[in-house]
Length: 29
Image (tube, rainbow, N blue to C red; front, side, top):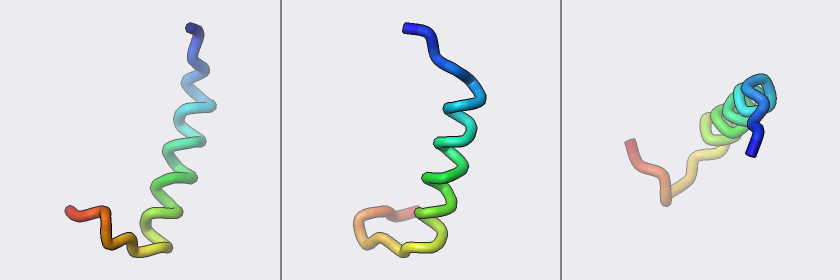
């Protein structure tokens, strides 16, 4: 499976932004 690093980077950026904007009780740091 070929993975596009740019696609992953963008996906991680979107997920990180969502996790920062929406406080989830299931996510604990």
